[in-house]
Length: 132
Image 1 (spheres, rainbow, N blue to C red):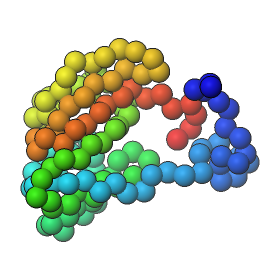
Image 2: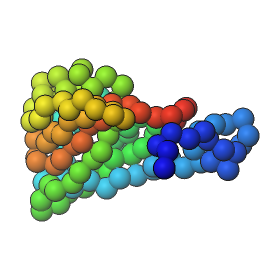
Image 3: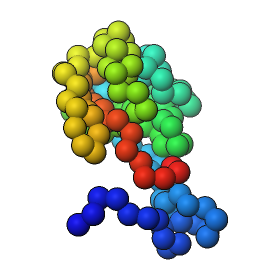
C-alpha cells in the first residue's frame, strides 16, 4: 500500500479544487480550567473566537475549531501538524508545556508534549500531499 497518492476528482469539491472534500470542523477538548487553556493555546498561536466561561472556541489553521469545555479532568489528545517542528518545540516549552525529544523519521518528525493541565499534544511536521 502506497502512502502517497494523487488526488482524484472524487476527492475534491470541484475539478479545479484539488483540496480534499472534507475538513475537520470541531474538536471537543476537556479542561479543568477553561481560561487557563485559552491563555495557553492563544499564546502558542491558536486564535480565540469566543470565550463563554464554561467553554471557549479556538481556531486552528484551516478553520478547524477546538472547543475547550469545562470537565472534571483534562484527558484529551490533540494530534497536530506544524511547518517548523523545532520552532514549535521551543514555543511550546516557553509557554509552559512539557515536551519530550523530537524524533526524526519518515514520513515526518514528531514529539509528544503535555499542556499545563496534562492533555497530550502529538506534534508532527507537516506531511500534506497537496493543498489543504
